[in-house]
Length: 211
Image 1: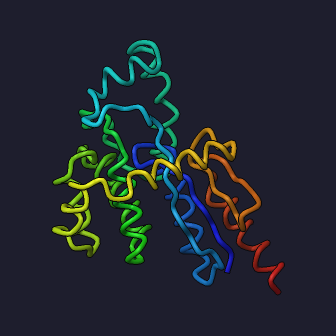
Image 2 (image 1 turned 30 degrees about the vertical axis):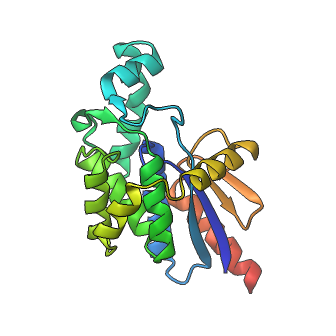
């Protein structure tokens, strides 16, 4: 087996697009060697705990409404190309994602990590839900087969917050500054939302090397 570590944030559209392309490659090669682990990387580590109005956030980040619209044109284009029905106008708030990353971590303990990542992407980008809210995260947990009551109780505590922040900092100290970033076999970093064809090529090369 080959370890594939993925640095990602549930509010990163390129991470959603990148996962979609990767998933299609894995589906075409069901005997692939990858063992996948998702790692936390907050796009906005200093975001207030309650999040903020998405329009205000985007206009502040990109320098006005026109610049924000321009910056998101490639996202819309590539989202459509990937077949994702992104409902960007339905997203009211940009959340702090520390709790979403905690959910991904706990889902990983139960072998449901990729399911959690997919559910968070859908909730945020397709359904316009606030994935910074405990009720929303508990509902997502329930939908992927986790005990929602336990998740809700954990979210009400400070369990694993320090660990998530430390892992985020470790990624930055490694030189990672944007997501998604895929690390193959602990050695080869593949940045960005790479097309399905590239992943098929990588998997073919890994299979050939194994043979």
